[in-house]
Every structure is written in C-alpha cells, then in structure tokens.
Length: 286
Image 1 (cartoon, rainbow, N blue to C red):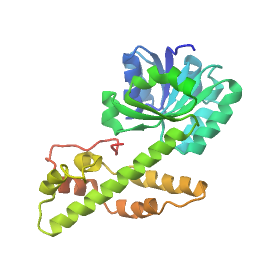
Image 2 (image 1 turned 135 degrees about the horizontal axis):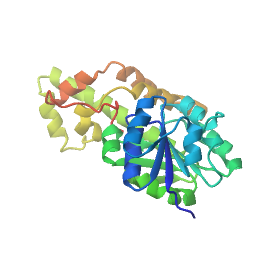
Image 3 (image 1 turned 90 degrees about the vertical axis):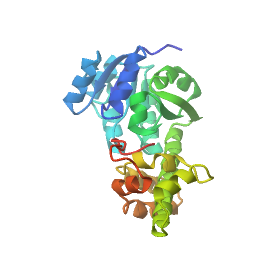
Image 4 (image 1 turned 45 degrees about the vertical axis):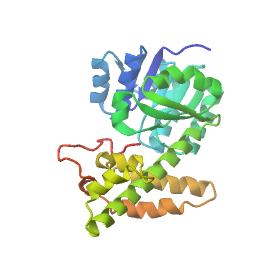
C-alpha cells in the first residue's frame, strides 16, 4: 500500500494548527485551509501551503485531516462543491478528527466510496495542551488496512493511537463515551469538594488526599486546568446520538443541567490552584 507524503489539514484552530505543525515536523508536506486567513498565514510561515479552499487542499494532498467545529462544518468542507471530495484523487483518504456524530462520518464515507476515497474517523482526546505537545490520544474507526496506512499521520500528533473497530464512526462512539465519563467525573468532583467545604474541610487538602484513594481520576487530578466551554455541546450530542439509536441517556440529560451551574473559577478555587495557573484555553481536557 502506498505511503502518504502530502497531507492536508482543514481547520487551523487551536487544535488543527499545532497538529499540522507536528505533521510538518514528521516530514510530511502540509497544506491547510481555514476561514481565518491569518491561520493559513501562520502555517505558511512554518513552511506549509496556505490554500484558498478545502478543494484546493485536497487537490494538493493524498490524505486530508478534517479538524473543524461540528457536524455542519464537517459536511460543508467534505461534501459541498468546493469540498474535499471534489478535489481528492482516488486512493486518497479523509480523516475526520472533529468530534461529531457517527452518522456524519458514515455519510461522508458513503459519498467518498464511489470516488475511490477511504474514510477514517479519528477524534482526539486530551485537549489543546496535548495537541501542542503531540501527545493526543486518537480513537479510530474504519478499515484495518486503511488504519495501518494512516498510522504515520496519526502518530505525528498522537502517542496513543487506538483502533476501536472496522466500522466508520466507531471512533466517535469512543469519544462520546470519553466525554460522558469526563463530565460525569467533573460534576462528581465538584459536588464532593463543595460538600467538604460546607462541612469545614479544606477542599484543596481533601483533593490531594483523594488522589491516593479509589476516587482518583483524571478530573480530580486536572480540575484546576479544566475549562467549561464544551460540556453542553458534548452532552447534547450524547443525548441526540442516544435518541437516534432508539434509547435514552438519562445521565447526560442530568449532567447538562449540572454543568450549566459550574464555573471555571469555582473549579479552580476548590482545587486550590495557584493564581498563575491557567486552564486549557481550548476549553477541555479530553
């Protein structure tokens, strides 16, 4: 199977741009597109190619990484007349790294198949800091052979690359589960520390103690770095996907209400974070 040398990146935001730079450092020729021309210029300053459209990126590339905000944007940059599928040659691959519904990934895959283009869904976890350091976790759905072919691309920005299943969309199921567990533990940690404070126990001291017990978790350890930009979107998506599957997500519904009452400042205060410690500006540690 042929190796990929030219990789495109659609979406050069706080996740996509550092991922593109890691691809460059790994030896790939990289083209990118973003609605904000300044982000394309930032990629070009590092030796990349700033393209004028998703189609132009695809025409340059053998594989295209999509890292945009939501389902509507994924469909726009892949399926529309100036989208990736209009420019990518047969034998190319679309890698959907955005966090979207499994059905969106399958829709793109269905449109790509007649063109001889493969599709992987590969959402990432652990947030902006991991994107910047190239230590993301990547959950992948799609054909095993295509997964193997794309491993060098994924390993340019990730350290844990996990093939969930051969069906496109399986990576998104893993990401949904990751997000649901993350926000459940954030809500639980907040409630526990707030109750301890009410009972006269230092939340910061309790948090340090709990890290040595069975309550230890990512949320407990990283509480002071967790922002709250994305939980409502994540949890709404979980409810929508559950509805599409003919079931319910009662915890996700409950968490949506709980998470709306929390603030970043309150999480940092309860954690005992030093004033100079800044949370993840991407808004999540996923």
